[in-house]
Image 1: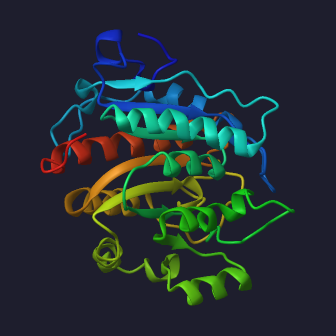
Image 2: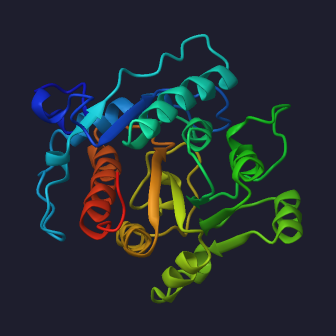
Length: 290
């Protein structure tokens, strides 16, 4: 057992060949513009994951028994964002080709592009995020974390946003021009009718990108760009549950966790969301293969 792998699993449940899930830690924060610390997010999530119960009480399954392999953290020191994205893409692409389910842990949001570009075929990106991240360029870069969903849209052609409560005029125009489905946090407050609408808007295959700042800061203060008025933990897992029931989730990432000393519930929450998704995918994904 060791804290270097997700859930601190023994080798018999974490070897690459035997595992159905591959976790890719990426401690990169090269384009953040406000609070710092997301480079420590992946390691903190993995550390917290060793303190979870591995039996999921809701689904009655233990996803770790399917095997969860954690690759060595992608080396990011002195590397530019494009090189990091390409390295993540290579790892994810191999995992997908080997029939495994990839989970990317950031790191800033740009690392998700490596996960998205490692996918095959036609799919939607469901981005759960406080921000639209649809700028074409920010701070002189097309690969700033404020542009990540613009690049994702260019790659796969279909992005759905949920939890948004901050965007600029340029992003509003792009949303209107490209008819992008956006579910605003203000419309997600009363009830959960919005969940079925989100799922209805998705293609059959879905890559889920979860920025922790989608959560309200009262649930998740440990992020570089917090926005008031966010969704709750139960909102997030209810959405993931419905996506797992009605669609095929092909990849997942959790990004933008910036750990705060003595607020361990933040990284624990992020780890729990990863594990809940794995439980839902196992329990409800009977018609899908890893």
